[in-house]
Image 1 (tube, rainbow over the protein chains, first blue to last red):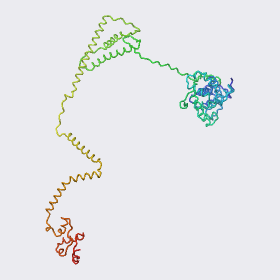
Image 2: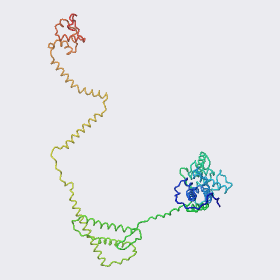
Image 3: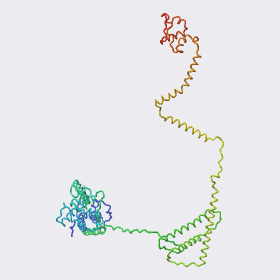
Image 4: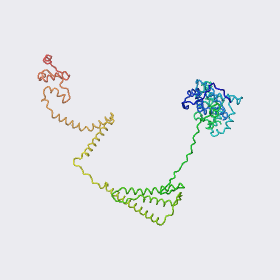
Length: 201
Length: 315
């Protein structure tokens, strides 16, 4: 897959005279260093180091399948590499990356299963869950994942962002372009359904 | 089940290798050099509990115990060595008694002898050197040494006992103590004690009386009735005394005129003469006349006198 060339004057990459500890930079500083050609790669590697595990876990909770999660995570960070120059800092970098991940997940599922209805439960994920050997060890965690499959996709997305990723309602509202009250209601209903399912399953 | 109270974790935990591979793929996709971003977790060696096995090395012979039971041998030897050391301590207590300084080699050799005798009981494996069986001469020498060691132990024990006896003489039992001489003079301490006890008793009685509840009216009346009976002899005595006093009273004629007027009142509780005539009044002395005026003013006497008597001289 060939990537479009970035509008960057190609110059010889010089090794920076001053070594910077990127692990100690905050989000704004990381983005500013990304804008500097000398530090772009290092800044991106640091960004990858910080967010890859989180995004992978989030996507995996949404799609269940390991292969699908790998593919979606790759797409997410490719999008980040391409669009970070245009990131203006109006929202948090964390929220921005999660938004990319949510959109990529939906796009991936639409491409893979054109018939999918995001307002309904995705029962095909139950099969993927049962085939995954890694989650059969802890019964309650597997039960929870199965219960999530019975939720509508959008409701599941809100629940995963709030319960597993610990995002607050403002961040989720910015990410999903939904009001906080609607999110709270959606989360509350999701929790009740899951508790009923866990009692039944 | 409340999932918010007891948070359930996600079961999807990617391992290190998976994350490293994914990161490498992403870096290649974006066109940068792939570097290792995720550090490998340090493999921690399993901690194997080790039971310490003591090794003994003496005189160039190394003995390695095969089983755990062999460790108990060391403790037995240590107790016996401790006994030998104790004898050495006892010897050092006294410096006056001349003793031969026990050479250290003999002590160590005695330990070695004891150890050899114990080790013969347990199957110990010799690693490097092989010990030849001792000859008869060596056995005899060992016996002599052991006898000497025992003799010295006995001497040391006897010396220690003697030391204890000497030290006991410094302490006189209570029963044999000489009583202290009594000091001359008043026993101030005992006097003070008696005074203090009396003061305490008085204080206690005073406090007790203060805290007593006040008597009710019925109790007071009852008490007064009782006290009236007890007071009767007193009254009788008083009455007798009063009668005696009446007998010793002065005769009426001996009283001055003014007093005679009220004699009846005093003796018989009767009012004095209700009326006084003029001739009687004129014969009175001055003091009696003044008294008559006082009596009339109090309504006790009525003076039937002519008005001309009451001149300004009297008023």
